[in-house]
Amino acid sequence: MIAFRTILTSTTALLAAGSAHATDLEVMHWWTSGGEAAAVAEFANAFDATGHKWIDGAIAGSGGTARPIIVSRIIGGDPMGAFQFNHGRQAEELIDAGLLRDLTGVAEAEGWKDIVNPPSLLDACTVDGKIYCAPVNIHSWQWLWLSHHAFADAGVDVPTNWDEFVAAAPALRDAGKIPLAVGGQPWQSAGAFNVLMVGIAGPDVLVRIYGDKDADLAAGPEMARVFAAAGDAREMSQGTNVQDWNQATNLVITGQAGGQIMGDWAQGEFQVAGQTAGEDYSCLPGLGINELIDTAGDAFYFPVVNDPDIAAAQDVLAATLLAPETQVAFNLKKGSLPIRGDIDLTAANDCMKKGLEILAAGNTLPATTILNTEDTNNQLNDLFVEFFNDTSITPEAAQERFVDIIANAD
View 1 (cartoon, rainbow, N blue to C red):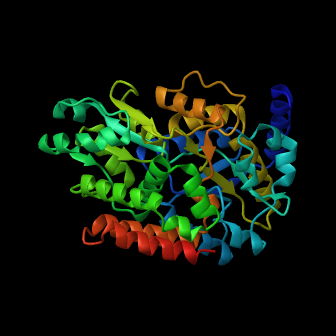
View 2 (cartoon, rainbow, N blue to C red):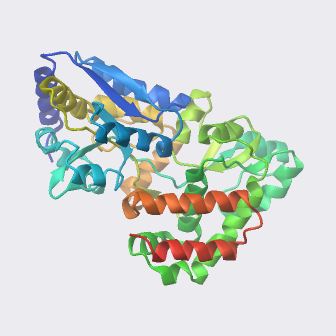
């Protein structure tokens, strides 16, 4: 293990060398909600402190909106200085085309192989032995967020698992609440389904279906139970009538909805709203059934450029993103877990501490962005948003379409 003092010294030396020519660096991302904007500002402030300038290129919407814009810029010969993608396979074609920079030199100078935890995050950035991205956080989908106010109004206890939540749905409806808030963006429906898969069928089922493309398992009774639970979730979500994920989170924050299946980035919205974990809301990892987290998250990639000053600034940003103080400031506001375990997180709230405990115990599974290609995930997104919006589609019919997607997946 490289000593913290050594890491800090190498980072300081790199930042000092890179600041000789102050450079504007356009950084594109899709972090635009209240909590996300507060978090990304920590990255911008840290980079600006090196003498360079973060030029914010936020794209409203989601990754599905932002990624095509980012790719179009790069292949069109107008690359930005850096951009956010998720860990995994989203940048494969850009790497194969030679359009992204090899960051191995920065990674070796900063000792990333010794500090990035779990190592699979850096593995997801590595192609043919070369490191092409800087992982900045661990985001897990495996959370159910519950409004204490909504359940108090309904006269029922805050659930401790998915079955109790389903059982409380009629009381929530009688109290004028939406039991489960699900926004209209396709990735929200697919993400909720994947959480149900892990909670009800187990993590091994998800890995075998998405990782091994096991179509027989996808067609089996374990997944039939998951699709039945998805039918329950669809019924519970009727009346949500919002599009963006953070609008659905706001329904939970304001007590208009009982709960939401959403990644731990929702914590940033609760924080901005001044709510306290354990008092105003609860969080159930793995739906309170299988308490684990997936190791999804965000990473920054750096397009190949011809300007040496921009290239030097890219190196500085890559080092800054993983610096200890930057990791603390960013992840406390983002709601995500840091990618390094040698930093002080005593300020973490109860939900973040749960995630850290699960991570420390090694109860993790790979993210769907790592297991599936972008094309497969888009097909799943289309299936599940249609399923959640069209009650005439039976769970059995949806499972048949699911099996077909898995059988033909790359």
